[in-house]
Length: 434
Image 1 (cartoon, rainbow, N blue to C red):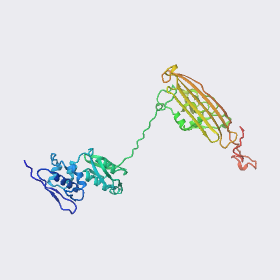
Image 2: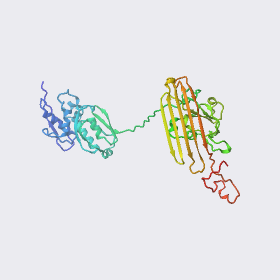
Image 3: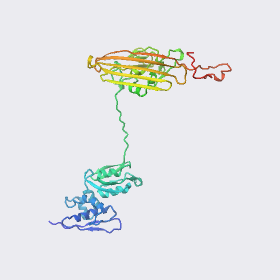
Image 4: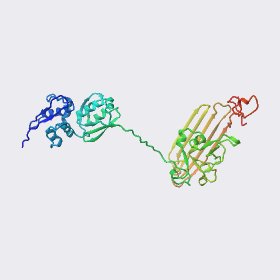
């Protein structure tokens, strides 16, 4: 049965008169070009290109309407044949392949205002571009770099939006919505959970009903801490003393207002010494706040500080640090870990050593040096049953620093101006232990 010819009508909002094309019974290439030009003219203000000399827009629209007579009639095709307003627009959208189609096309859209380039892209590709989420004035102020060359439609749209902080989202087989690119506020954190070395605490740190702070070796190294005081500055509630009241020199601290001079431990063994501790052999420092008799035995109310020594591991490693600085500061450390396969697969030896020498900036005769060594031998490293033999030796030769004398309230006419303050002496002077 021969289908009677139909008339395609396109009514434009401009002054261009309606255009009618009567296709023949048998499809021909010239008619297809004319139809493609008619589709392209829909978004070009009603201007119809010549079928013999179709413009670039018509050539690009040709692949999307070439199957007009080959496909089964769809509602969009039927509507276009009846001359409904906007029917050709819907026809081009219906016949356009999905945006994921990998067919490449040649584009020549110059740089310019973003709204104009998006309209040109929609005309050339048949893709419906919805930009209603972006204010019209803002869209007109944005500049698009344009797109030239052979691209897929998805690649071309990405290129048009480059540098605009806008992205597109597919809302249909051949439709996209332009929207503002959202910021990624996700933060990825990697690492290992801190744990307490005391065998009395078997649960994860977060499940222990007590305030415990763990300062790992990574933090100690990053801060280049050279004394226990430097390490404990990471913990709130700790106050350091400077020998007030005639107490011995060394690490004098209070936790939550209570003296913790005798609450310092090394591997859960009480450390009574009155000296300045060096963290060169510390794997981590654990500070438990509040009564800790269940963890370390009898102690003060404030809490306890446990210094965890470095232990041998099954992996070979060597680390050497050298530091120099102001006031003749020199510091060298070495950390050597070596597995001993001859004594067993889980046997290892570790050696930590340190030497530090430094003066006090701006002070005469105040300075000192210290050195330490800490060898250790472990059997069964990394297993449930372990035996570790370790030795720790630290030697210090330092001059205590008690500052300069203080002028109390006095009736001496020469010192009255300096009462309750520092005396009129050179700050570099050393006054001994007086």
